Length: 251
Image (cartoon, rainbow, N blue to C red):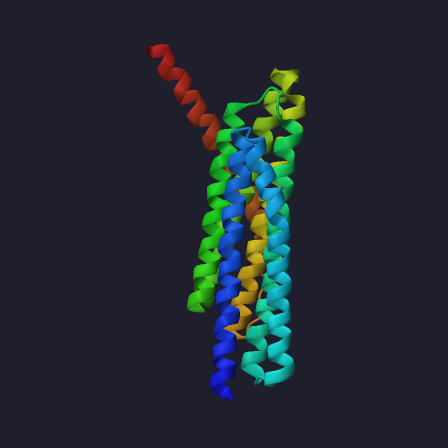
């Protein structure tokens, strides 16, 4: 009986990781479509969302079946509950990727801001690295690695604030970018929320691996840190911009 349970639990783990990798790809595809103004690519992300929802339902059904039929011990029960909770966060991340794809369709044909789109691409890389690190921590049942993801979330929050300022400055310089800018605001907010959901994943990984209930979201546990890093980043960015201007003058 135990061997059967272990085999089913292994399949559940595999399904969760596969779902996570699929959603990571969705994040990439949706933001790439947005930046490249690819309406067709965006529609493909939207069309794939139903499959993601189906995957979550299958995973949930499999997990509940394990609880009901196999009578897991306390440690196993904790692992299964963590998977159920974490899969819900994955599904929400997928929803946000779809929302980014919808913005691609809405904003297509309007004047864009290349500098902002480049920054969004960088923010996307940070978010995807977070998700893949979370999945790696999950596979290795590494609570310490999961806890470190809060540091990555601080970087994502910092990027969100910096890009928000860039968008505001761009609109003030060129009002023709207003429509695109509203979509930029939406996309960076969605990416920031994805970062928060990944932190939630990390919290469930810690609970599964170590039995600890922790608060890893820096915006909740240490909001002053985000503000401090943002201020430092702004000062650095202004300093870099000044250096670039000075170099141009000397040439």
